Length: 607
Ligand code: AMP
Picture 1: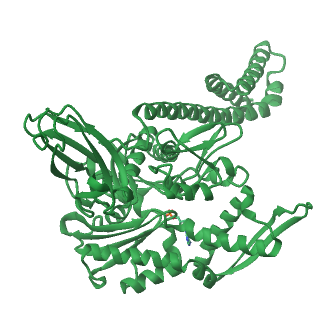
Picture 2: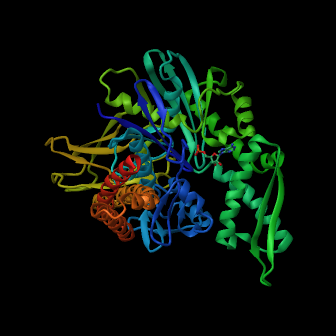
């Protein structure tokens, strides 16, 4: 049976899991960590770095290191969120050809799905190293609040990484799956997910026989741990400005160091009450004097600085309950997800609001990936043990006269779903209609997200109102939207995929896929070279250690002299092959050196 991995593609960290039999396994990366930073960098030499290694060099290479690409995925260039990211990012964000966003790293421009694909590719490799076989299929999670463009862009990222994303599932839903998997539960739960960049809350009913039904979901794609960090940074920067009259934000390196220090302090304050932020040589004055930043921060101050952010999550929880038409007391368990839920003030606020202590049985960093892995296995297994019923987080509709938004599929409708609406022509002999498809909660079309527009052409010529067109709007299990149109009289149908107005064309995706493949080939070759080089060097060291002894043993025998000369030239050739980085030759030489060493050892033991 084909293996499917589950990937939690996080704003800050990503995690990959697989179901082994009935046991969910979180796969550790080569460094021994269960989560990998969602950080991508390009070095001066043009080398791509992903994960911990990219994060570690961020300070010295801030301009070419991408953090939190998830905040930009599927966004339009002119959106307020992108403007915000441009102001706060250390890397350069530029406008793409389809009103989308691109990121400049060194001399190349990358689309956001491409950057995310690098993280996904890394997760794929982690899984492949563990399984010892190629992985092709994955379930990838997204915040429940992601709209169609963001989901589509995430799927594109998977495709670029060489993964067939067989399902996109919502993070809170995945968490609930992991929580309820294998237990015969019957209860209503809330999943409170505060991660690095986004906040989501979902209310679910977990029923007997493995039915997971989402009742409502809502959130904010621009509220997360980074906003907490930003508050600490503001506090540090303004303190420094008051003291020295220097704006640290002007210096990218200083800003990156501040960012790291702020996050570290925030995390420390989850465990201790006081911490010290110490950044020596943070900047130099115009007179070449080095200035240092040193400030104590206590938990109470952090809580004050971020109280409104925590309060915002409560407002959203209230909304989710109202949408589900449930009272707080009807929630029987609260599951915490995301690194930020380790903050005591967050836990305390959640407990106060829901009037119960949150559940501590699931690991907030791993639970989403585990849920994705469980769903992945369920999708390919024949036996149906689990049914997942999710909802659409946004209403879907079209623009009608006067820029009004006409809702066709309400928010929190169980997906997959389809709705049909009949339109009539509004002019005589009208042969085309333009339909704007939007997602959002506002009654004004321009305040909602434009998913796409299409023109239905080739209508029969007739008096106005005479041509009836039936349009079907569909949301599939991934939350992705498509639209079909049919001329009711002739039955002639036109199927139209809503091509997101932002995002990538199929050709672009193909090109990116092929460069991702090239990268992988190169990387595997590099790895093969490094491994054989190491092996060769070990063999050479052992052979060289034995040379004097062998020389003594063979004395002046021609045969022995010959063998020694051969061994010496094999060592020489290997060194040359290593120097030239010719992998195949190094591999060949390793075999040769192995034989030589065995022969040497034979001589030594006999001698
Ligand atoms: P996630 O997106 O779930 O990986 O969450 C990452 C966010 O959680 C980042 O903003 C981290 O700084 C934050 N985080 C991780 N550990 C802690 C902690 N012990 N206390 C507070 N925040 C944390």
